Length: 601
Image 1 (cartoon, rainbow, N blue to C red):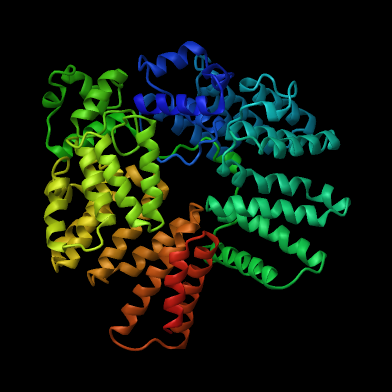
Image 2: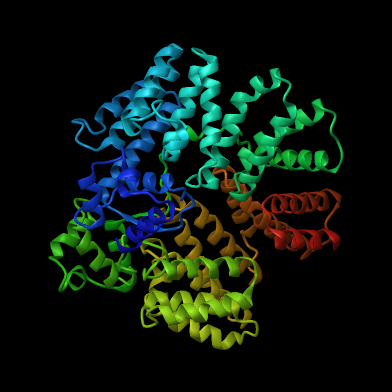
């Protein structure tokens, strides 16, 4: 795994840490070294915890995981879902079936302890029992817990979650000690190895639990200051549900000290908008990370990817296996019976037009200098600094293999398209089709869209193509490919494995259909997507999707008549919601779009 290996080594050097310190309590050292050498398949659960300990949480990497890893993941998810639904007998039975002989590593054993503790919580076991059980969970991977200050430790999101649950139950046993722990965690959050997302997730939980303590000491201003810190973190990471909880506390404190004015009105407006969004979809805002702490994202099962990629390219098992392995190896992988050795898997993925790494960031990995350059380009594109992005893209071309299909697609198609100020639409249609043909048979994709696997880069290039087809009046072909993309996005690869990408790409495909004048069923598609955003707690996407829905809604009505008063009010509501969410999420260009549309009314 060249990318993830060097990425971790780079972060370790930056923080002056060793791999032994990073993996302490998570796994045996020989296992970590075997994973680094690709002698055994990497455990995504292990790598995620190691990355979290380094403050890396918003991970857009595409992971290719073994069937066994996926089966354990599904088992964990099912157990936690049953506990959450209070189906405790069935959950207990499934816990006993998970790693029956305790052959797996610390993290798997820790999960079993954690699941048993959650069951005990649901059964209202005494606080001291729960304190003891949570301590056992923590000690499984953090043996120095309560022996050294938290600030001196490396902790993953899961480990922080366990410590906060331990503190919560400690409040009923030793209140002062519990408060100490909460403040220790806040101090731990000042470490450079703690990422913003971790703070965004856990700040509200901490504040809720020290709120009464601070209020008793008449520290309303301190509470507001802590709220402001948490509000900044949640806005940066689009954690708008968590943001609403902090806003609620801040509103209460501002009223208590009679603080009013523009800030108070803004805080109220933000809070009301978020609460209304959840109410509009009948979704409870009661959400607890402790049932989601083991969730994976951006993962794809190796056997499934091989099968779907072969279907896209029209390649037989025998042809794929040629000069790499026996065809039976591929057959067994596709049936979910086994996964090829990691080194063989990497060769197979490369032959299938992928980067050839088990963890990928869009283009084949070169070194950390190139990786950081790619991040700079991405930031420049997202902020609209196209001149800077163009100059950096030219530098990137000098440092990577521009004969590699993945590099050609992301540079010659996606990045140069984004920085081209004077597009010749006809030339871009031809160019994008040529670039896509390096790895994607477009006609084959349109025929079996749910039976193939596309990378994120390929999907975005396809979206650029349909946009150019619409601009060149090739509406029928644009709609054909867009319908295929929409069907593809509703396959398991996206809906289950990569929710944020699904929302982003799905919204883009709906917008293209709107641009093509294909209004039939479009309002329902966007309404369904918005409902999905809320149910999956990804409401930051509503700053764009509500504006698109408003346009669809208005155009659908005004093809035959003018909007009446109620319809106009609903149209305004959609745009105001879009404006407020964009304002919260620092999406200034979306704020401008919503404001312009409101001004036109």
